[in-house]
Length: 436
Ligand code: GDP
Ligand code: MG
Image (cartoon, rainbow, N blue to C red; front, side, top):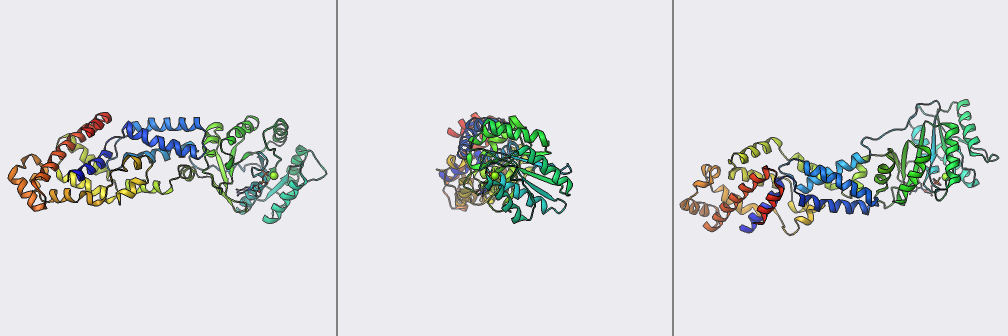
């Protein structure tokens, strides 16, 4: 029985404010997830420091494990870091001019087609594609193939090798022919160089687009940061397009880029087909980066079952030394309601490791529950009246020994003390009490 109560106590440990120990443990996991997702080391560190501050300042959520609460804080912060709500594209001009920029192979031509298709399907938009990649004849052909696929007209001029002139002529063509969106596909190089930067900058100046987008391959990881910075310094672009997220990347580039250039990520590319375009949702990306899609829903489940009113009452009782066995029983039932403890805990970064040797299942509480059920209401609310004859009766009623009843009483007293301490917010003192 002592063993079982120990387990229960460990579970109840989660009822205090988040302690520094929990935080450090969980943050280690989070940092690892970020580095695995190819987030820049400095940025990962900055992020975990921020989360740490937040976590230590958070109040108690009674039936939540600290680990779970941590997951929630981490996810919320990550979502915010990546830009809150999804941002659309500025289509205010007539025509609205959208300029694509980025390295060769990042997916500019493909995304130009996807975006044209996406806008065309909105009915009120009539897009024109303009081919400004003059260095490879195949590039112009590629855009024509894309245009044919989606039934969107492509403006090109194979006899002209001045991308600025083509861009201007493309916009003029759109105006003259009733197109209200112009998407300008440009040339990229394999790495940032001056010629490319000068060219894109000249196009940008000449046509003054409503929207300049930087297209980046999410598989390029940390390199993406330097590229984004170089393009942003020259173009001060409006948004980022993250392509090739259908690969096995976790998409850490999203965080790194957003942190460095502070521009919204607007769309993601998830395949080679024209339909493989999605609006960027920061919270989904947070899940992906942390690799914990279902952990978050578990956390939400736990929160649903947490009755705030109940928790407040409980805190009052603890403060007034009125915490009794009835309350304890309620706590146990709350914990059980959350589902299979082992599954739940095992899926939480940090908490999993923390609790791994504890091996909790619903049976862990059976003996404890039996003893409490054998107490009278008076004994439950005021355990100090339980003398030796009462102990004998309770033992018999619950099929346990007097010794086991004693054990529960002793540990209940310890726990009540501990709960009072946690109310004072003394994380360190609580940890000390746990060790004694
Ligand atoms: P550009 O040089 O920037 O114009 O890049 P492209 O549009 O030509 O794309 C380079 C390669 O990446 C092509 O083979 C595309 O089919 C592929 N590609 C582009 N976007 C995606 C995407 O979201 N997912 C996948 N899997 N491939 C993509
Ligand atoms: Mg291209």
